[in-house]
Image (cartoon, rainbow, N blue to C red):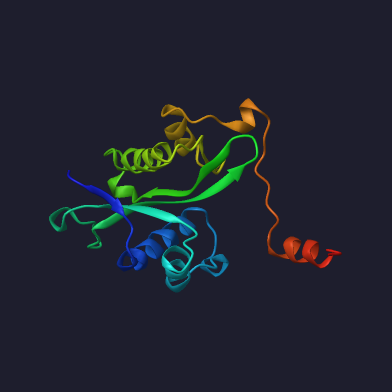
Length: 173
């Protein structure tokens, strides 16, 4: 099987959104919980100040998916800053359609992000993985990723919408 990894273009965003919706289904979440749409992706990724970068995996038309798709995977990442380590990459999604897994496509997407980080002199690539997805964790560990919850006792925390609103309302400044 042949495939290409390339930077995401605005024309790809409809397919990216299709893949994001597939991910939502794997987590038994509702599409109503999804706040992103094609326009938001376009504004955030290709607007005046890009908030993310993205690579896509594409197969030739003759190797398309059962549904007729040629864009079959993606990885979306953004830059963060760590006071100890400096500028880093946070990889938000690394996804390959199930029928194309096991063909080194996910590995190639991950390597492309790692190369982008390395070329820029960044110190690390971070991501989170659901505890429901042991195979994903194994995939990352096999490539040198460290589970910081196990290693350093670090936990990923989040202030969801209502908590964020409540916390912001308490601000005195």
